[in-house]
View 1 (cartoon, rainbow, N blue to C red):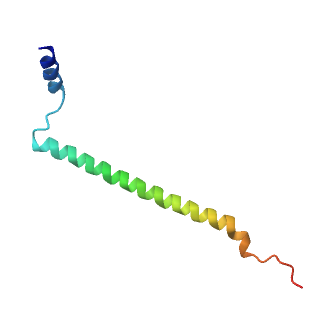
View 2 (view 1 turned 180 degrees about the vertical axis):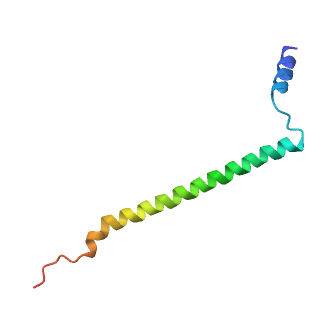
View 3 (view 1 turned 90 degrees about the vertical axis):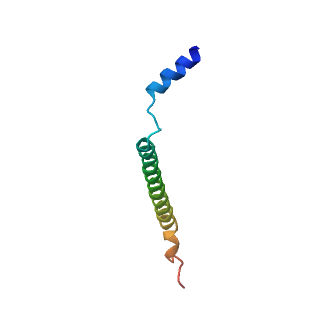
Length: 71
């Protein structure tokens, strides 16, 4: 009996997902969140790649100069 009352009270507090509008709003929010997370992942990959390239250029740039003594 107490469990039934608790479930009844909980269902009164939670929004109903039976209507198509609520389901559409919920899936729309998830699609937006997925797009945002994919965009952030893309930006992080671009920044990480640029950092690796810049680090290699900085690290290996002294090797491009020939400092050997010419006889």
